[in-house]
Amino acid sequence: MRHFNQGLTGLLLAVSVAAVAGDDYSKIEQRMRALAPNANSIAISEIPIDGILQVQINGDIVYISADGKYMFQGRIINLDTKEDLTEAAKAELRKERMLDIDPSEQITFSPEDPVHELMVFTDIDCGYCRKLHAQVDEYNKQGIAIHYLSFPRAGIGSRSYEKAVAVWCADDQQFALTQAKLGTEPDPLQCENPVAEQYQLGIDLGVTGTPALLTSSGQLIPGYVPPEQLRDRLDRLASTQAVN
Image 1 (cartoon, rainbow, N blue to C red):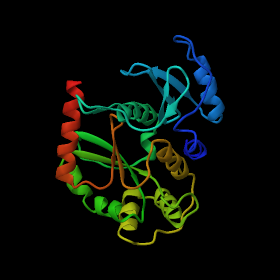
Image 2: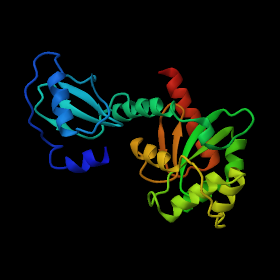
Image 3: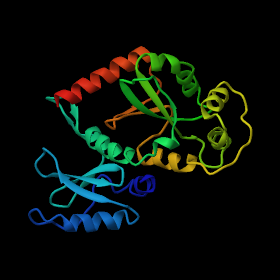
Image 4: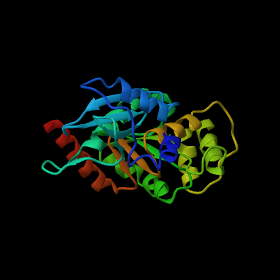
């Protein structure tokens, strides 16, 4: 999707496509597939705005006029309810992708009976990732389970990537991760690991920096949030979702 966005910079404001009659969205899908030929999935759905359709392309969301003449990218917000319709759609996509993540491929720090479960994309050398991990016991005391996934920001093959692999391959992954985040160089271990796959997953889910926190409902919380504030935020999110 990154290549799709970069390749269509000049097309996002106005894309002329064939007119579409009635509810026949097949021509729109054909045009979108022509613009994003490598997309694994394209799904078209209606939103509460007449004449505008939502198009899911892999893990991204764009919008297109129902007559097929214009496409645009951005957030749609209901000013009456303050609901971010675009983020809600993306959250559903993330939630679906998260179901495929193998729990055994996460490095987990959790209280016995967590109230909230978070997947955290982390980078070994990221300053705020280290700050978050230094307080992992406090997050656990707040009832928050932290399930780490690797996201070496410098990319595959970087030194941060090598450290993430070494941590994964350690006999005691929790200890190795904690030591690495304290600045200790991990032993240069190699084994079969999910680091590259998790890095790509993060990109697909819209992660652009670390730490990136994903709730069980697919909400993306970018950046470091102190333990008590995070618990309050997660409680409010859960309350809002329960009402909806």
